[in-house]
Picture 1: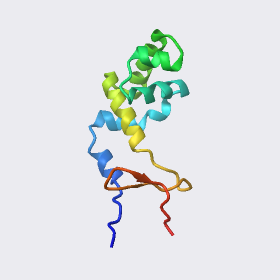
Picture 2: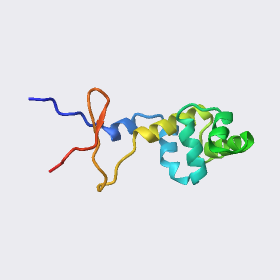
Picture 3: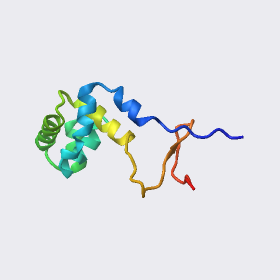
Picture 4: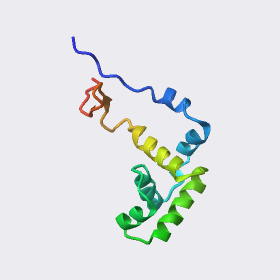
Length: 116
């Protein structure tokens, strides 16, 4: 009999996070669309210069967006913001109507799970 894929215990994982990181996760909805674009790039470790080049604005504008992200999420560094951005991507919770995603032992995902 094949092993069933493991579902991560997201609530337990969130509870294990430091308070400032968990708090920041709760405030990501306060980011503007452009801040979200910058926030997502922070999850990949991009510098202000790289963010500016990718999003086609000045490095100064990138720095301003990063500063605003830090303020809104009550974080102290771009490293913390990058970590929260990465966690935000990993912890995406699908709406009930979205396809279900199963995490396999190999780390691959399968969004074709039939819950019937």
